[in-house]
Image (cartoon, rainbow, N blue to C red; front, side, top):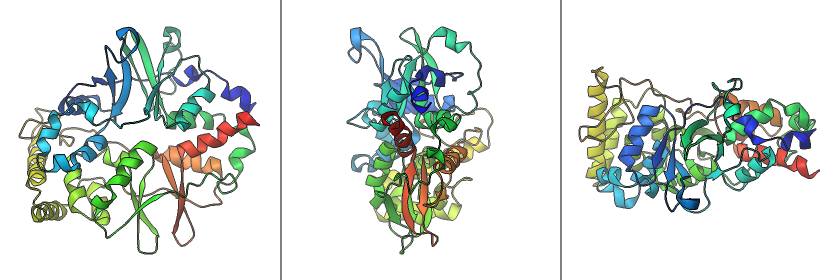
Length: 384
């Protein structure tokens, strides 16, 4: 039964998807941020046309979110003049190497989709046949994917979360594997990224880049490796650009406070400015002033739903906007070695996280379980 399920067409996952927001690869980051703000999506798709595809057609070459730009601002060449980074093409932000977005035929099997994910894909872009669009829209509320017309074709992209959720709905087909412990299934990833709570969070920039690629998180721990919280790409994606300044100025513990829901406390904002001045990062300090002033003015005005800085750059934080995502918190979702696979799947999907931390009873971090790790277990059923 499991093999038959895995051989089903991936188009079955593409029901009821909302419109996909897209930008051209040569668009400026400012344009991409504007598209992101107005779409209320967490990511926008990035497309290359002409020579980028067969016969001059267009292909999706990646995706963009605020977390990408925050880390881009933290590059050494952008710290002195951060406002120039807004003028860079969005393609400069895309990760190099293996593509994280892959095109897939709608008649491809779920097994093929999982193989792409295990090869590093975060999103699968699939052309949708018109007769599928008219089917029941029962996945619309839960989907983290989207459809749009491009090249005269409607597309849908699927995330790792979509695939795991789809499998959970038919998890009985894989019995008894879902009830086995994650320890017995050997899916606990021990190659984890940790940063001490009292260390400058800028020392973990390499970890944040890796977390974006691997769809995981960075653990914040005490001096005995006990878990305090996490900093995840989904959390950074819900922040505004001033998070880049906070990363360059704060400890890991202070950054968790800065990025938690509700916005940073004023004393922490002032601490960031002071630290930036000490490090002679006047450009980042100006960025803080610019966007904080924008946030204050937009909260007092209902004329413009989407915020812009005083220099005209689109701001990720706007007092008149209800733009928010479930990932904006630093609290980590945890389980134990003895947790069942299905229990961890439910935890991850309920909290909309791609990484569940595995802890001992004393809160010492053992490792984590990711969507990719879960899918690897179900993929193995095809070989048995």
